[in-house]
Structure formats: C-alpha cells, structure tokens
Image (cartoon, rainbow, N blue to C red):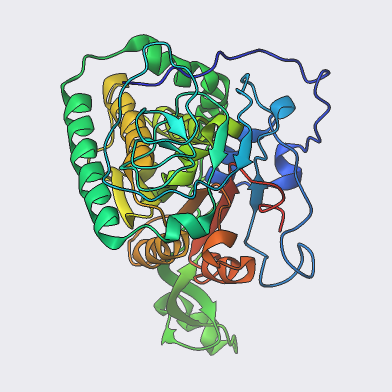
Length: 415
C-alpha cells in the first residue's frame, strides 16, 4: 500500500531565521548548481566547509556539500516524532514472515507475531532482526543492537532475502498495473512547484560551455595562414594557424546537450529513518523536481537517474534514452524509489556509484558533465571516510560532481 505522508505546512522565512545566500554568492553559473539552489534556497542552513583546510583547499575546490539536516523547524512538513530506544531481545530467530495485521495498529514491541512491530524478530517491521523487509507502522522504534543483528544465522538471512525479493517484484507489478493517482503525485509536485518554475527560467538562458576544436589564427607557429602571406613579407611573426580548443563566444547556443546524472539514495536507511526527518520523502521531491524541470529541455539537458543501495550501485530509475513524459510515468519512478528502499538489503554503495558514474559520463560527449549524489550521510557505519568520498568526487576535472546530504543522524553529515 502506498504510504500516507504527513501533511505539508506553510511557513514564512520570518518564522524560521535560516542563513540564506544569494544565487551568485554561493554557486557558480553552472546549470545544476542553480537546480540545487532552487531546491534548497529557503529550506536549509549552510555549514562550514567539509574537511580540513577550509573551502579553498585544492582537494575540495569542486566539492559543494549542501547539508539538508532535516530538523523540524527547517522542513516544510510536519514530521512524526519517531523515538528510537535501544533494547536487547535475548531471543532467537526462527523463520522470516510478514506477520499478522493488527486492525487497530497498536504498537508491538518484541515478539514475532505482528507486522509493523519494532525491536522484535522474524516479522516485517523496524529495529528488529530476522524479518524479511522493513515496515513502518508509525510507532516509536525499539532498536536491537547491531551485534544481535549480526548473529542472525546465514540460512535465515538467505530466506529473508528471498522473501524480500519476491515481495519487491510483486510490488513492482502493482506499480505497473496501478491507476494514476493524481492526489499522491500532487503531494510531491506541489512541494517543488516554485523551484521548478525558477529552474525552467534559468534553463531558458543556458549558454554553451563546451570548448570546440577550430582553427586558431595569429599563432607564432603551426601551418602557414594563406591570408597572412603579405604580412609575413613585411616581417610579421604571427602568420600561422593551428587546430586547438577555443571557449565559445558569450551567448553561443549549445551544440551538444549537457549531461546530468542524479544518484539517488534508495538504501534501507532512507526508509528506516524517514519517520525521523523525512529524508526519503525529500529525496523523492528532489527527483520529482528534476524530472518536471527538465521536461521538454532534452535538447539542452540529457539526464538519467540511478539509485544506489545495499543491492548495488547502478539501479536504473530513469534511463537517459527513455525519460518520463507525463505525471503517471514520473509517479512510477517515485513509487519505485520508495519500494526499493523498503525491500533492499542493508549496505552502502555510495562510493562505487559515484566513481562509476563519473567514469562513465567522462566518456560521453556533452557540453558539460554533472553528477549529483543524494545521500543520507549514513557513511560512518560502513567505514567510509569523508576524505575518500571527496577524492572520488574530484577524481575527474571533466565532471562536475556534487554531494547533497539530505538527512543526518546526529552530526554525521557535518563530520
């Protein structure tokens, strides 16, 4: 069943005094940096530079880390308070199952009977062990220790994984066959409508940035320029021409589209902590904004959207050759993101996804190349150091790579 997300609430900037920067002060004139700004300009605070040495270090020169730390005051939604309480179950798992449905949706802690419980075992829920997949029933979460989860026998893990894969395939079939739900899509579309309008104005004024090979004249060496023969007889030295790259003139139209890839975090932690800070919903809104804003701009922007989670680093959500053309197709992408985050394996492929995307886009011909990584900053759990992530993001000067941390537990994003 498609989840009912919390109701949106309007606020004025005077109520929430967040630090704001003008468009040109923070970002360059590059198109996707504008896109990022359109999304976050009045919804987040900008922290100090990530890493050592400040924002002027060569290592971080291209890294723009925009931290969307989803505090209740800085988000346009009323987020349910989901308290996480550590507990030990002390009980063994048996076999994964969905569990019984409680018609009254009462909270269930521990045990192995009810679907949507927390801190238990065997059933679909949150904070437990041995269950087949995640299921958020809207209650406070009792979380067992990682040591208990690691102790689950391999045969139980395998059975749970098989059950999750089957449930995910069934969910995808439901998505394919479902009728278009206008009210569900409008929840996401309305949240970014103003940003989409602003971005499309910017897209209309995009200019070429890619350098083109052409004849460079008035050179001191190269091939003799026939038009300069007389000048050579009079002693002129710069009478040669050679092939080289030249920046396009101001206002030149694009000869090739700009290439964009959005790496969307659809990992299990996005679903698990969505009730805490709305990170999955925010990521879906960002993807909705990209799809709506770039519609009918295929001649200027060629884009695709790839997911990354514990299941892998190349989960196709939107193909560059088959971009969604209407609201129903866009809603299918959003539903797939949500379903994948619910049923995928635990794990993190952020670095692998970023590295593979930068290398792939660098091989494609385009006016400019952009990779934007959406992540919930749950990197420390998997031993990923900020310095390593920064190195990957800045690994190829041809590709403009950016990281947007759309959620954080504690100060993980800042660190």
